[in-house]
Image 1 (cartoon, rainbow, N blue to C red):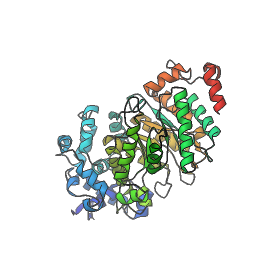
Image 2: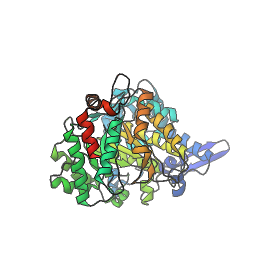
Image 3: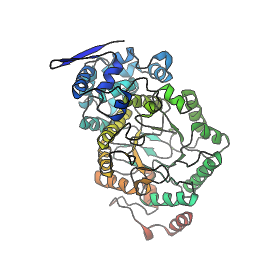
Image 4: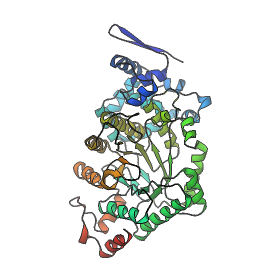
Length: 464
């Protein structure tokens, strides 16, 4: 295990391991302070960042932050590393890699080809020495395109997950939220429900209900009920219509164990989803959610900083060719991301690292009510991520999830981002919105009321 040192003025800072350099180079955040791995002051943070900038990228292939023998996520990262893809940047340091990423040589084509050659730790390392504008500039170069019943991630597009949660899983309440979201052009990433209960009968009822709506009105989107992967496998075996298979994941074997999963089980879920062959355009069918602090909250972070653990989760996600990956950035709470500044930085880091690794990144731009953050902070992050080319965001009635009790982005927020930044829904979904009279490409506005075909309007009103 290598040790490092760097002097800032008269002060020399020493770091006992690569993981310590990584942790102390991270921008300040409450989770790393809670874990006792953060820099003690700004001087130490700068020294760690300068040290990190001088470390060769190859070093990350020689020093595992979590031992290969004791962690299956580490084994996955090392065993699937593509040396040929890595070759164009293999001679660079972390600082040199940053310079290359900001150069014209790093374009959409070269970044796509590079992704299999990068480890999550390399992505996390370079993000720690980048400014906000750097993270945005590089992210907007990268497009990660996935397909199921429509196409997500194209340049100039911004998709949304319509999230019609209800505190009692009441079908009429869920249908009302779905109607509301459709009328605002939301739902092209998916219609995804967090169930209030994990009972199998309730999960089946929700899956069948949403599938009936999608099939009846020929909506080019996909559904998901966010239940444990074992439940998804069970209902798939019963012949229930499952589009996307969901699971929360994190970046260490121990933390994933706390979620009741491992890589073998995720593979079983992926194979079960493939067996249904429900994708019209492609077979990207996994939906993963992540969040900085999840490994620490399970005391399974192995002394790593939370952002590096998060990047490792994208290494897990990448292996299963997901349709969508969602960093639920401010959901865990202020113990991990204390205020709006930390949430904004974390959201941009997550998006950058995920896309650099070839993962189709979205973001639940959110905060809990006891965090030092408000909707103005979320507007800022939404705008920055829109500029950076985020694949999708959340769409929830009034920004307030009445079941999960947190604040996120609304149907109106998606309209704001699309109109302000000149972004459009997924092409297949956009065509459907136009056919239904909900959306007009000419002015980019949502139409209400009598502009809808009467049969569609009356049927959806009956559902609600």
